[in-house]
Image 1 (cartoon, rainbow, N blue to C red):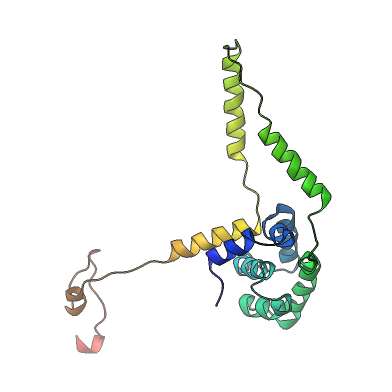
Image 2: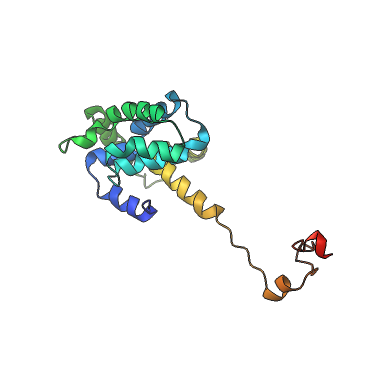
Length: 200
């Protein structure tokens, strides 16, 4: 049985630095996507691929199960599953080191980003003559930010996949008398066709 969305979220939140990095960092997500493309998998296989790799990163399955999981979920050959696993093991190496930390440039970039976001200039107490210019600049910046696509990460792919599964589930309801009376029109106006041709 595969883990639930809540279980995945809990593991990611409480995970090691390596798990958090591999599961949620854009650079790690790009590398895993490159491996997917390199091995000639199709887009309809990506959601299964993402689930498998994400669950291995979060520790739901050991890395040694990767070939079997890939073969079963993606319906690929043993050889292709082993080839993909060999490519993935280099990327998943940080999971084997309990002292692993994200690369220094990644931590520095993250720190700079947080400083940039939190360093807000003080708002002047007197009105500025260039208010309309500033308002236009702000409006342009907001429009530009709205056009930026969100970064693709393993966590985001999992959220998209989970929301698709919930959206695709549909429930059909019929009243008992409608089901029992042959020839009774349904709401759409069509007549049920469950009687065989011989009985007519």
